[in-house]
Image 1 (cartoon, rainbow, N blue to C red):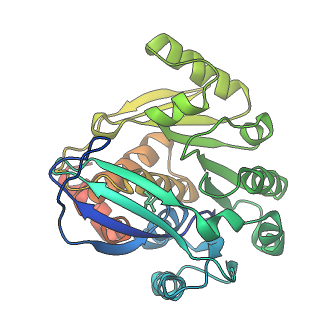
Image 2 (cartoon, helix red, strand yellow):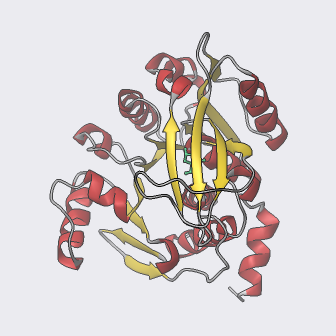
Amino acid sequence: MNASIIVIGSINTDLILTCEHLPAPGETVLGGDIKTVGGGKGANQAVTAARLGAHTRLIGCVGEDAYADLHLQAFAREGIQTGAIRRCANIPSGTAVILVDTKGQNSIVVSPAANAFVSKEDVENAKTHFSVGGILIMQLEIPLETVVFSAQRAKAAGMQVILNPAPAQPLPAALLHNTDFLILNEVEINGISEKPISDEMTLLESVETILYSGVQAVILTLGAKGARYFSKKQQFFQPAFKVDAVDSTAAGDAFVGAFAVALSEHQEPVQAVQFASAAGAITVMNLGAQPSLPARKAVNEFLEKRRI
Ligand code: RIB
């Protein structure tokens, strides 16, 4: 049987505006009609895992607003277990304001709101779901102390931990020690590294430091350039699949969710990264986070068309 996946993370309402180019400081630009869709790195990764066929549970917080109900209804439709999502009184649900330009590049500002209240107690209350062989996925849009605590709990329960340190911040040694797979982009590896990364040598030094802190593998996502996998045993490069980019929002989340699903199916690292890259590429082809995340059939067909 495939392992089940628990995601502890953020749940946001994404307000999306498309524009010719992203405004510079002090500049006003005109945009298209505003679109409201489900987002949040935690929720996006959980939706991906569920759409790709994994038994998925999301632990997080929503606020006391109409968006909270819409999120919970949407998760239920996806088949995600929502019993450990807490409603926080007197605060709104998390919100992200996202600007997307005609090249598919974006700028995102997140208001954490209820996400800032995801606590150790929320995790403790859900600990019966932490079981041997399970997979835990986390990001950094919830309090760091909750992430550190959850990683410790998960490892003690015999789970594998995937951390996507986004948005980036320095990571305590205790967190890296309890992380199996660190999936991050170029901005994020700079954000967590002690020394600035300026070239291949400084990048490899940073990766080596992470691997020696207890992480099993580092997966560096490079957007349109592909992805790199580093472990003590194996290193490889996965070229990006060429697609017409509409919006890169949540491509990283699709990658993380899909990698977790591949891991739960005991796929080898090369296949898992390929599968995750395909999920990320499909996500880039449409506007918005959750509306763009692929179903299993879409990823399988995408890979078949490329004869993989
Ligand atoms: O990774 C994309 C996500 O980042 C968006 O859905 C937004 O809500 C922010 O959390």
